[in-house]
Image (tube, rainbow, N blue to C red):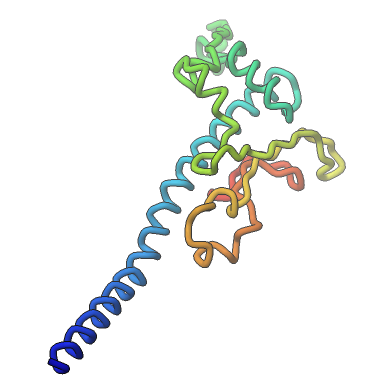
Length: 188
C-alpha cells in the first residue's frame, strides 16, 4: 500500500514538473507573439499620426501638438496634389501645373471619423494615450518645425510578463523627434 502511495506522489510531482517545464517554454513564445501584435498595431497608428502631422505642416507651416485641432484638421482638411502636365524639357510645349485636393479623412481613414477619434489611444493599453509634442527646434542655425508622438514600452506591454521587456520599460516607441527634427520612427 505504501508503494502505491509513493508512486502516486511521484506521479503527481512528475506531472507538476512537466507542467512547469511547459510553462517555461510557452511563456517567451506567448510574449513574442503578443509583442509583435501590439507593436504592429501601435506602429500603424504612429504612421497615421505622422501622415496627419506632415499634412498639417504642409498646410499650416508647423506641426500640431493639440490632438483636438489635429483631429479636426484630419476630418476637414485636404491633401494638395500638384501634377505637371506637359514636358518641362520641351520648349515648344507650355507646362501647366494641375492642382487636385484629396480629403485626409478619406485618404488616411477611408472616411471613418470614429477611427480618427480613436487615433490617440494606444492599442492594448487600457486607455493610455500617445504623448504628442510639437514646436520648433534649431538645427544648423536654422529653426525648423518638429513633432514627436510616443508611448512608453511599459505602457504598451502592460499585462505581459515584465521580465521580457524590463530593460526597455522606460524607453519609448515613437515617431518624430523634438531633438533632431526627423519624422522617422524608432522601429525604422
